[in-house]
Amino acid sequence: MNKIADNNMSVPIKADHYGTYKGAPPSSFWRRCLSERDFYIKEAYKPSFTLSDSDKIATAGSCFAQKIGYELRKSTASVLDFEPTPPGMSSHTAAKLGFGLYSARYGNIYTSAQWLQLIQDAFSLSIRSDAIWLKNDRWFDGLRATLEPNGFSNYDTCVSARLAHLFQVRRLCVDADVFIFTLGLTERWQNRKSGTVYPIFPNSIAAEFGSLDHCFWNSNVRETVEELSQCITLLRSHNPSLRFILTVSPIPLMATATGDHVLVATSRSKAILRAAIEEVSCNFSGCDYFPSYEVITSNPLLREAFQPDKREVTSEAVEAVMQVFFHGHPMVKRSITAQVEQEFTNCDELLLGTALQ
Amino acid sequence: MKTLVLGNSHVACVIQAWRQSPFSNGREMSFFVKSGGLSEFTVSGSEISAASSDFSSFLERLSLPKTVDLATFDTIALVGSELSIFHVVNILNRYRVLDWPMRQDLATPALTEGVLRLALSEALNQSNGGRILKLLRGIPQLADKKIAVLPQPFPSERALGSKGSGIGFRRLIKHRAAKPAAAIFSEELFALCNRYGAVYQPQPRSTITHDCLTVNHFTEAARRLINLEQVQPVDDIIHANVAYGNLLVDQILAL
Image (tube, rainbow over all chains, first blue to last red; front, side, top):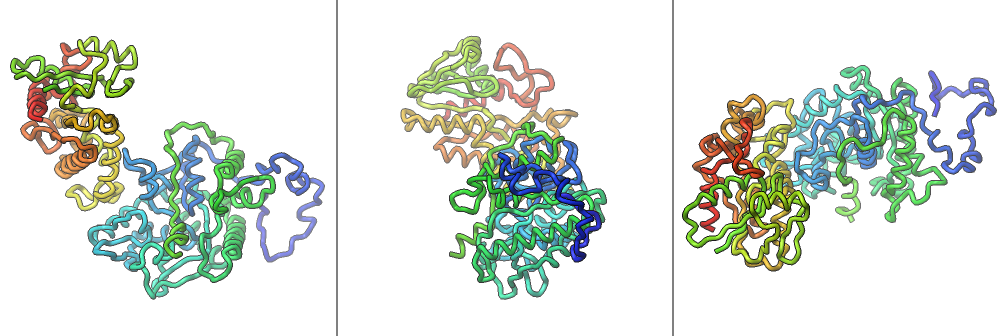
């Protein structure tokens, strides 16, 4: 996608700003794409900056971000990990406990609000007391409750663990050259009094974590743009040269709390995220959109993009996405330089499909 | 009573002690060992055999058989074989443990003891020793045999004076984490042994100093398994000597 300088979405676009269709590349035409074996899909990503092996990359986001991170770790890219898997731990256990999934042990970050909250907390080293929960005499960090399944023996240890994590997130944000963030959805649960955003419906983790103070919120384009803009501004206030690659997860919602059909809710969420990223990437230089969503959901020539559950993407689809990504970043090679263990993913959202039905 | 000792370079002190021992009291002890850990072998029924020319000639140099029938022994003792406190130190080189009496510096990532235990448990299970234990327990002919585990000794207290190797252990001691580190190593190895119905024989208390090191008397002039006439290099801090080997022989004979 070519960026248009100073694009203002509210101003009608004049044809002569763009010239005619004659000079447009073949990939701008549906029929020509369709006649091409790969739909010219690699042309779908024209980043404004290219990654090099020395760029320190941070990854975060929804479950699909784990797949991008996994593929990047198999390449020559320098993917940061400030809370790495303890030596000796199996990759299966590591994934369950949130190690090796992202650049720190924050677990899945599905929404822009959750990302903003994490960054704010990291730079202020703030503890949200309304996200520390008690169950059977064990204390849980409600912002990543599934990553310490047995909880903590006391409140102070829970707070210490959270502070330790936030400090590593802060180091990550300051050290990274590029942040790759995959947005998953717009639906969120938050505390109606404090505004604390939870990663998932708290009751889906344990009934004891539910509270009448928790409320549902479904953000719109304006809110999402605002949150993403605040993320970028805050991060750049500490790390001015930080660049961003924003993506939208192609994985449908596991469940919606809107009461709508899950298909409609999914489409709404993804459309909002896609529109918000478009606006943000136009407003901030060094901030690109990577079309993983389109490669998987809209490419008519990509067969079997989803597994039999019609939700999880196939390895072939991930491969198609990564081919487009690496085509846009030719300096990063896919040769395996580091030992990467078998991939295991950890998706909290699956709890909505099991705990609540 | 016949005992077979399996293991890696840490068996050198046991072989040396056994061969010097004037009193066998009718006990027989045989060895199936390889520097760097048992590998390149095959198991057929209850027979274990060297499967490479390197391994075969290694055993030959030590005047040991290339094939042994495990079922003909009353006891099998597994020595060293990566069952080591080094797994704990590898983790603590990168992490601090919340609630431990160690320096709680925010710059160092933190783990709970529960997560540390999980990582250690899996590391031990995946170690050379862990895999051999699993293999032994999978051989039906050994179902009623006693299997014992004697871990790799803690590194020598010479690590305290060394500038290079042993920095992780020096840090453990300095940060007062040696005691809990040694405790969880012992507990997790005990749990691993339990899982495979093996007897855990911990490092003899009299050989331990600073909670995670071996008294120098038991580590100076340790011999090399590849050549029992040869002393380990001066900077080696991980192997024990014949004095330590004598204590292990006592532990094995007491099984």
